[in-house]
Image (cartoon, rainbow, N blue to C red; front, side, top):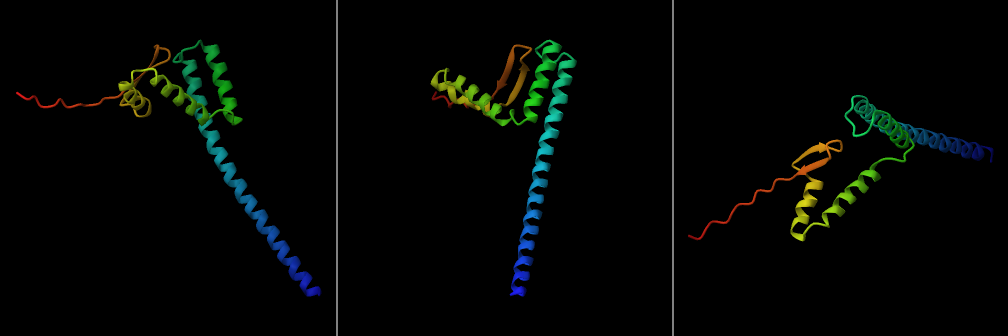
Length: 141
């Protein structure tokens, strides 16, 4: 009986050890993912802050820096991210629905896959271009 208890105890310890190792690996993976997310947030913050400092934003410096800092903190807390981009895209596509039906497909194409993008908010807007080449049918002369 004693042998059986030792064997069960050994198996129990091995299972516990395996569980601890698995949890450690999962934590390391999560930390690495969080680290890369944090690095991206830091880089974006530095880029946006530089734009504020050298006057490339559409706001005064004080407001720009305050909003950049707020966005950075929200992203670090997981409150800012892809959901905002999804909402941005949905809003852009909703504006396409106000166009005549024959122009809506071109509008959606400009949103999803523009040929060129020009401008910024400071200049009054962002212009997305999409070039579609249409061959004229041969004349019947």
